[in-house]
Image (tube, rainbow, N blue to C red; front, side, top):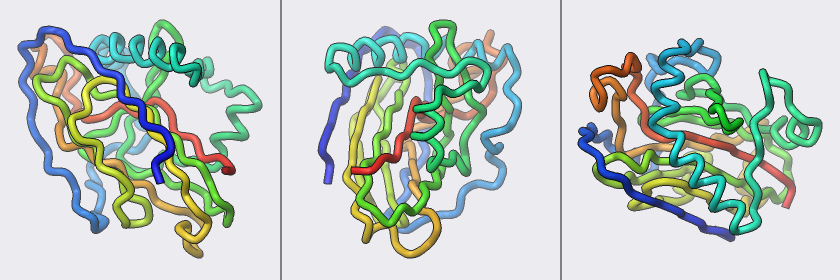
Length: 219
């Protein structure tokens, strides 16, 4: 059951071109093995290029969260997590389809996915609250559809997403099954290549959705 739904967006003129990737259905599909794991290195030039595309959306995300009194966690510096963060995120594994963690000059951080990615969440055998924060770059010519599934069963479909996203879901213990972890699959209907948008950009990665934060907490 969705308990919170905040979708803040803005637009700015763009001459961009995008390529569309099909959203996944209700059944789990294999992840493209060519997608680098989350520990893949990101060159400084590429990081700055993608940062330029997402920076404005992240600032809007932070401002919106502040207005709603929902907070916006500042990123740990050089991987140094605060004790509370380490405890909260211990059960969250960015397993497949994620690029390396990137950090903006203002301290914000995010992980890019392409068309799809999988997060593993520890099975706590308790009712849990899943929170997802992310951004679809507002400069793309059309909004995206972000699809979510939990252990192979559709969880939500966010249609017409542009800009910042905040979603919360109550996940009962029974839905986590008997395995040691659950799989949260995120699929983006639209992907783009920064170099194709701006030929001066050295970033040739295919990107779809920037995951700012995922938390998995007792409900």
